[in-house]
Image (cartoon, rainbow, N blue to C red; front, side, top):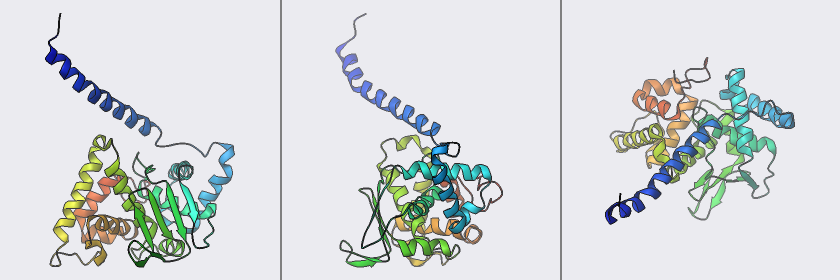
Length: 275
């Protein structure tokens, strides 16, 4: 049976779209299958496993409350992501494996409930000894995140963020939160992540509701109301550091953020499971 020219024109238009969507679906399930790598059982990684465990036991309250199974997942993800990121020291800062581990652990904490956890767009991390001058912003800063795929951090403020786990100030979580949003916005197959898309849009809507001076909630520091990116990042800091207060002060925002990240910091007996 002969097909009309219109049919072949339509097929030439639809075929690339179909194959693109099919590729996206295959990639989605491939990534999902790789979401829980196992480095614990590999003897060649024994030294790294110990270092990840030791650093987090010393500095990260989030990790300390995980079960053995949760720690295995956390450690394996840290080791997996460490292989994908490039660290450089600036202004004399020496980069060690322990410093790398702590910074990547912040990312794994943020994305612990998700299959999409590595943020591949962000491959470069520059570490400064303390606050540093940004020529772009013409001001001294603690950290910066650039859409091109790099993150700049003050090591002093990185450690400080973990030493005081209840002041709602954690530089690593803050900058990784910016990277999380940017990575997702630039991800070509983001249409596959409907719950993430919905959650991010709801967080933007919350920012629009709260951004006027008359509506700003006192629970969040004022910096949260600069733009929707800062609103999300500040909310993440509060979410992990004072979750009980957050859930009481802004229950709707807390619920949406918990759903978006697929974890609940208040559920400490079940590896922060959402249910």
